[in-house]
Image (cartoon, rainbow, N blue to C red; front, top):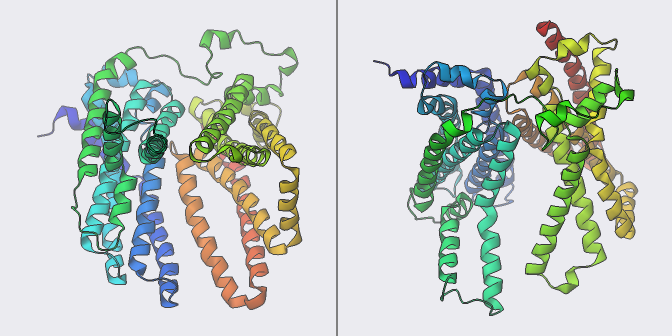
Length: 529
């Protein structure tokens, strides 16, 4: 006898486990394991390191940990927000499904699909035992750690998906909390140690006993610390430790909390169409659209305003750079001395932070630039304009670039602070063909990643950015093997040959994806019509 409350869960579970995306994920995962196993086995034969099984096992577990965090960023965080964005949550409530049934159907089904991706690895990871350096206890403990962390990440993302109205906000909070949970205890412990060393606090007296206990519990509950212990040679701990129990308890707590706030947070279903950042809908409708932009040029203005955030979004992005710079200075203050605060430190930090921030926001824009048109079915209307589909796409790209590329002003400010270091860097790059080749391939790889993200956003409903990261990682592993093979076959001319073929492959893939994006946009516009 089927329970009515589990009807949505059963249907969602069947769709998730049988979808082409999950099948492709399983195939990609097995290919990744093969690509990670082959170089380790080759290096072990050459005597490059001992215990090849432990090295393979360690890399595989860390990759899983990263991808679980990325799944929390997009796959799990959209469980409820996608229904809010598509204005479908009210229809679900009209079916008299209670909150538990909706949460189980929209989130737990995804959790089961992700659990299957982890469990399907176990027979192949057992190869690490035959390679040496790993025992069955370590495998059981590591996968128990990952399963518990996956349960926690799924329910944490579910809570934010219930609380917030859009996936981007829920994903941002999920990623922040997960990163804090994974690595925040290291920073907290170092700060405590510095304060104790300076004599400012006594960890055995007063309220500091409580804070020290919190840091200890935090460290024991973190999967990163637990995995570090598991990877030790001769691990003899328990397969199910405090980390597994604490993560499961926290996951249950977050699910229960999502259940409690479900009705208050979903009682009023409001339109969630694209809008300017942090502005009310009414203010947007009375928006000051410049008269000169009425017409074709309004396409770029629309994407600049609603996808990249407009002028206010630019201020927020500059604020992110300033915040990260402040954190870097705070870390230097905690763990360094006054000699660290030099013009060179500030300039180099500003250069790398601005480049990293620009890259992150470009990736986020690439995942949204066409997806918003697909979601709100506006492509057919835009296609009636007297411009071609490629020109339409280029105008949208110009609008999003206008909302992100100004961040590079911080890069040039950093260059002004350390012109000598920047000059030395480019002299080294251009003086050696090998370094120049790697520099060019790095840029091509990022351009390829942006094209891949945009294309995936047109063919899958959610998780385009996370899937692009996974595919890029898999492709990067393939390129590293490809480079190593060419090095060994071509002898002294190996680096140049390898870089040339790798760059050629990147350019060809960029052209293919560029054309595929235009074809997919035209098809989506025709299907809407």
